[in-house]
Image (cartoon, rainbow, N blue to C red; front, side):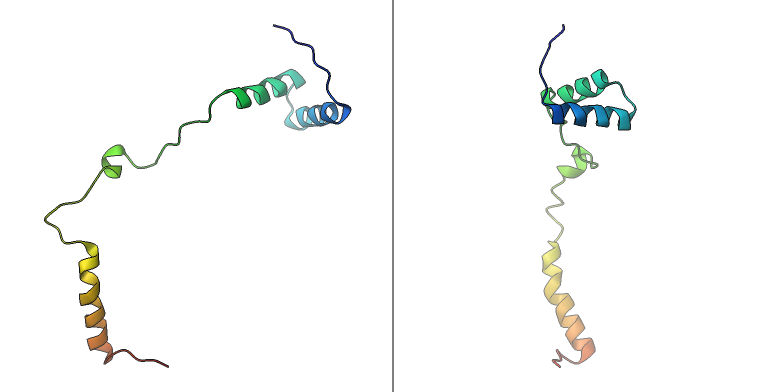
Length: 85
């Protein structure tokens, strides 16, 4: 298919410069730009597998937060209490 369009001079110059800098023919540059606009964006893929993303933990294992108070008490006992400067 062949389509003829009128480009504003500044856009024409920008396209010619970009094609020269990219070392590709003008037609290739325009086709690439049109494909980027028309094609849907790629689906975001995660580096983690679905099995990892769906992991909910073990119901028998205590929550991480449950150790927070014990850790704080341990730090206080080793440092002689909370000090403020």
